[in-house]
Image (cartoon, rainbow, N blue to C red; front, side, top):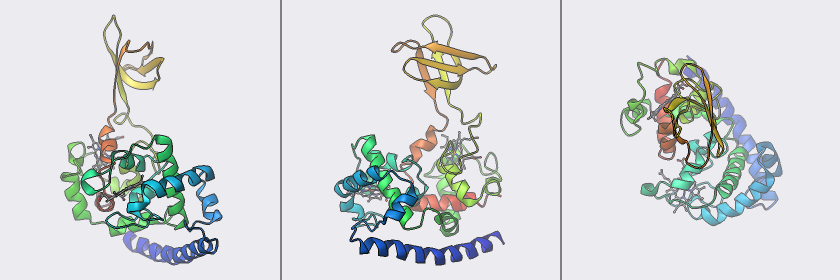
Length: 283
Ligand code: HEC
Ligand code: HEC
């Protein structure tokens, strides 16, 4: 029943969308803007116009050769405007690792661009997806187009999800807990981003062990850390704060979500679709 309602919603959205898309690219062509982006799309996307401008040049120089001049895909390289990973991105958290690390086996090279330039390219990409109208409407389509069986295989195989999760244990009922859009954001980025309003749980909290020069190590949940100090709350709820000077005291930080962060650069669009389709079945 729910699926039927969603399907009807998608059909409706698709109708609205095609009109909107035509209007935007029409305006772009009229302005002879080779990026086919109207000023309205730029404003609506809320991206910084200066970053967008810089990003356009950086994209043209570093990415267009493979992904095409307007990111609609090129020889052997995918369409980035319809990429789920790009659509799900907030502030580069998903895209930046792919740019930095590449997917060398699949033909996407590593890049040594500095973070500021990656951020500019991300801003440019977000304006492209906004202009095409995909950013607000894609989520329902993903959930419907993925292959749950393949998602399950990825969960228990290449994705390695089963090493930390179980569909009958901690993830039981996850498909009923969130709508498909939120669920996708949750598993891509459990700590934040879109739909990540759930906040930090005890299981996902970052742990830290501080070993002073004299005295025993102190372990607990990280409160904050910078070059000058580190503070934590121990299991008994007591707060500890230490002044830092270079390597003293020794500070070891463990992020339980590192597994997720490491995986981000490995997912393909199909992996993302399939996984979300699988997770929604865990009712
Ligand atoms: C030499 C060709 C090449 C260049 C240059 C290149 N890419 Fe790629 N890119 C690829 C290929 C091929 C893939 C698909 C990899 C795969 O199948 O997982 C890809 C994948 C991606 C993805 C993941 C898309 C998804 O949905 O999974 C993103 C994002 C991306 N590229 C962005 C960029 C950006 C931004 C630049 C410029 C800084 C860039 N690429 C430069 C070839 C390239
Ligand atoms: C190295 C361990 C590890 C791996 C591997 C891992 N996860 Fe997680 N995942 C976690 C932790 C820890 C959390 C945070 C749980 C919490 O906050 O209660 C989490 C959170 C989640 C959530 C959000 C749960 C919620 O209730 O909001 C989902 C969904 C999820 N992971 C799915 C996956 C999928 C799918 C994969 C494989 C592609 C995967 N995880 C791989 C450790 C891992």
